[in-house]
Amino acid sequence: MSSYKYERLLSTTVDNALLHLFISVAYSERHVTREARNQILLRWFKPRLKQNKYRLIKKEIKSIILAGKEHHSLLEERLCDLRELSQHYQTKLNDMHKLHYLLEHLREEHGIKADLSDDITQYQPNTIYISKQHLEQCFSNDKKQLKPLLFILSKVDINSFTKFVGDFGFHKLELNEEMINDMAAVRVYSIT
Image 1 (cartoon, rainbow, N blue to C red):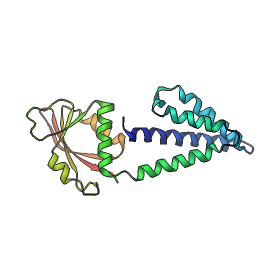
Image 2: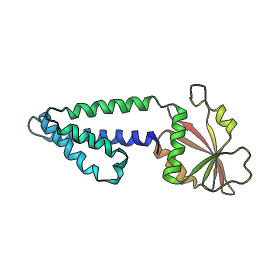
Image 3: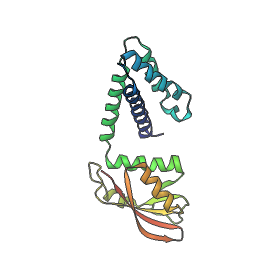
Image 4: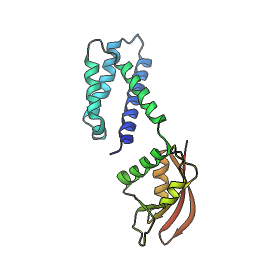
């Protein structure tokens, strides 16, 4: 499991909780006290404890619920602080981290493996290959992507792959060559 997956889920959950609170307050016809705001947030968080989607951050949701039950707690303020920390984490990601998280996501969520193409005689299905030398040339010492990466896709559905990468959000693709013997080449650009 990647730390990025955890951070992304936590960040999205906090954002959704705050949006729910702000919309609820906006629709209220009278002043909404701090205690009422806490109750709105608690009612939003409690069902998420039982949902499998949130198992990765279950401990944090429990902590948020406990904090919200305290008599003089400022749950909304704590969530805003948590949101700010999450945004700070995302700004610190460099291009090398983004590539690592993309490859990890493709493996965990879609079963697409990644391997170095050096000394490969037989390509495995559902695998991305990249040359170690090319990989080293594409990144600067401060881990910024200098030029596009060249991925060789072995028996990977190009349309699905393009969608997976686009949905993940850190990279864009350009088809380099047409499919030949279930192989395709794509250039991968980091979106900064």
